[in-house]
Length: 117
Length: 106
Image (cartoon, rainbow over all chains, first blue to last red; front, side, top):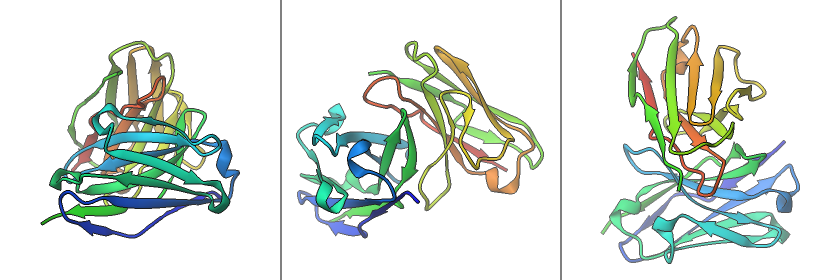
């Protein structure tokens, strides 16, 4: 069955960087985009961007241009989200999700990133 | 970018009620509108895709309708586990924007 398993919680100081991983199983990893979405405390869902694991092509939300890098490694069926220059308002749960036919049909369990001095 | 206006943000209801949530994208998205349920501490779950198709395993009390710039999610006979948050999402063009969310609460 399809599964997306994310790395564990992170605590970072303002200005630091964080990398979250998302390991896929149960399907052909290169065949589907992986998207990243976050939810800050008390806020809604916010789309950060997506990566095509087959070609490593990316699209980023304008709000995160210059601060976010999405990569993938097909040899270990894993996608990565790197967010730089962290601020306290980057504190959020970060989710990866598989895109199939214009839907996010499977999601990772979420990774809590806490940014605090 | 396509903006998605979702209403209401909070929806008081009681077990057994029928409730409706509305999403209005800022431009025509044909039928490329999805609905997700989000429980606290968990990952969002796909309920409805392409405006009106029920995702496998989702109870039939959930239904979606609409096209273009006007969409609705209807939940019939609310169950206790349905008192969580719901989000619509347009998947017509990148960025795949979400509505602001609706919390169904007692």
